[in-house]
Amino acid sequence: MKKYIYLLGIVIVVVFTISIVNNNLIQKTIQTSSNVGGISNKKIEWGIKRSKEHEQPDVGNENKQVLEKYDGICLGNSEKKEVVITFDEGYEAGYTGQILDVLKENGVTATFFITSHYLNTASDLVERMINEGHIVGNHTPKSLMSDNLKLEKV
Image 1 (cartoon, helix red, strand yellow):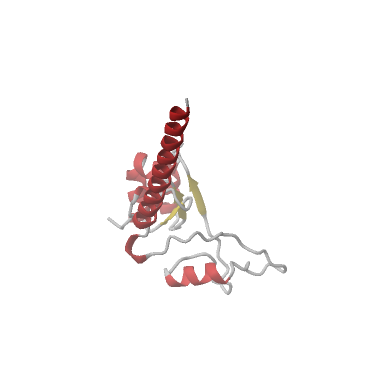
Image 2 (cartoon, one colour):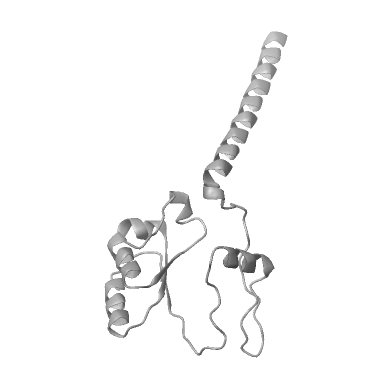
């Protein structure tokens, strides 16, 4: 009986050790593969601090630095009287073509926030968005990056 307990103890230690080593290897692989082209994969919390008197909100120093470094767009020009139109494109409900038609007829551009699922199922509409001068943005931090997809003007 002591042999079996001793043997069981050794098996548990070996399995535990293998699982720790395997987990460390997986974490290293994830960090290496998600650090594409020298771009940091450090998680940054996103949010704004609303201001009073209808002034532009504060995005915080860290977010401001990232936006400046990668030519990101967050806040418009506070001197111009403009309206920014955005669309949440998590899925295609059949209206985007009509929306693009109306925007084109009126010479208006917008920003469409898409997911990788949307890109995979409605790539013709995404291509049209890009070709007609609209901004195509990432709906959620990992939705496009996780599929290693790159949007370019066609």
